[in-house]
Length: 290
Image (cartoon, rainbow, N blue to C red):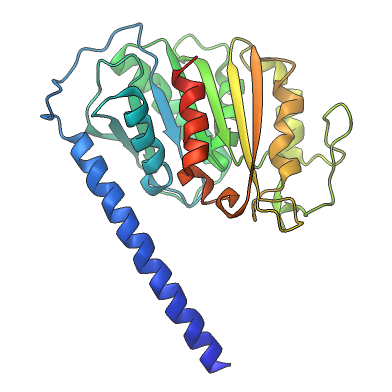
């Protein structure tokens, strides 16, 4: 038994150092991108800009969306982005700089990463109007991973009528737990979707979204991406396909366009999807090529 534990610890240590090395490289590239003197001047924002805001979920951080931001920089050929750090009081700290690109990139990082969906929603209530006021944009795109995805849907429903809140243009949902998390209100291969798309089992959080669907803005294009690791569980390890896919029943009748993509294989695991090159390519085409 001790040998097995020791072997597991050794493998875990190797995986930890490999992850650290990969993360260090990504941080170095992002640090370069945040330098304001990379041939890009501090820029005056314009009302025509539509920034893309990246939102991580529970236990996430900048490492969740680092590769998303890097891939977006390459897609739109920019060398800068803005990182916004949010503390537990909703106070903002800015790193990097805003650009004059048509689609400035904004990475939100919550310093307190152990938070439920409702707390992310509360912070977005503060952050998005502040960004709109500071940088003078009217519309925005958003990419949310895990609870960041559910929070973006909920914050739009809460603020749909408020003039100080920016208008959502495009929304990307990655691995969103809309109708439960495995072992927390959902179990593999238990729930199912009716022909209409409605889940047979609906938890209170899902019912809340369903009852408020008419508060979601209609002039929005949505891309929903979810994973299936193909181990017969029909999950991404933490979120079932049914839970992630169930948002279609709520939003598809409301929004301008609704697209969904199911990703398969080991790279479809919940915490790997946000770094998968195929997923990133799909996201960037949706955001920047239409």
